[in-house]
Amino acid sequence: MTAPTLTGALELHHVCAGYGKVAVLHDIDLVVPDHGILALLGPNGAGKSTLLRVATGRTQPTSGRVVLRGKDVTGRSPERLARTGLCSVPEGRAVFPNLSVTDNLRMWTYRPGLNRKDVEEQAFARFPRLKERRRQLAGRLSGGEQQMLAMSRALTANPDLLLLDEISMGLAPVVAAELFGLVRQIADDGTPVLLVEQFARTALEIADSVSVMSQGRIRVTGSPDEVRDRVLETYLHAGASQNPASSPSM
Ligand SMILES: Nc1ncnc2c1ncn2[C@@H]1O[C@H](COP(=O)(O)OP(=O)(O)OP(=O)(O)O)[C@@H](O)[C@H]1O
Ligand SMILES: [Mg+2]
Image (tube, rainbow, N blue to C red):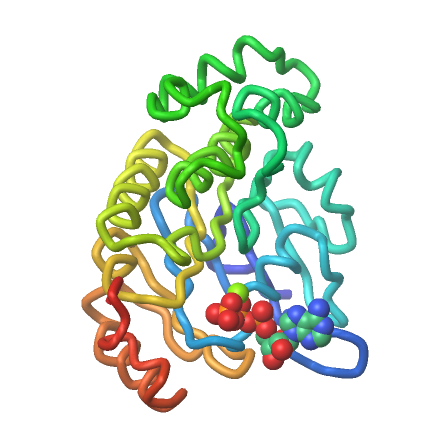
């Protein structure tokens, strides 16, 4: 028997998954290292969000294994995985638009051992802007602020691993850059991050390692410098409309 040579915060081994009869992920092998940021890049429809769905238990793989901190967690429910320390900010800002910032934070104090005051304190310490707007309806926050709120939810549980899906979506480049700076800080504070991005330039700047996906397969993994050319190539093959060079955040 051969032991796996790599261990990470999260590992996918030979994962296949899809929706009904449609296969989306094909034989995915991915290791999210124990430290730092792994950026997962790829054009629209590559399967990035589906991969995160599998990692968080929202979609079950048809074959393969999901391993969290060395433990096989294949088949576990999203709730159970969240309790084990895996937190994700899914695509689209996961905030309740008709609740205030404070009430949004209160909704997320479900984890045992968390109380409302601590959650608020942590969130406001990390994102002072949320404190100024704590009584405002979340739906009236700017896109970047909503993303901060969604991230503070994930972070209040002090996760072992943070999964972020396109946090820069729809944001002005300067706001996206600010969020990426915060992600860098979170990683430097010791939480490993899997950062899914469609637009690549900023992600390449802050990531420690990068995996590039297209058509449901991981095409290459390496340091940002090693994969930079391959990223461009993958996006260009996906069509001119997805050329990252034409994107404001690329
Ligand atoms: N709920 C669903 N039911 C059926 N097919 C789906 C579903 N969600 C995604 N798909 C399909 O799976 C494929 C991969 O989608 P996915 O959302 O994982 O891509 P992505 O890389 O996250 O793309 P994007 O950059 O646009 O967010 C696409 O062809 C998509 O149409
Ligand atoms: Mg997606």
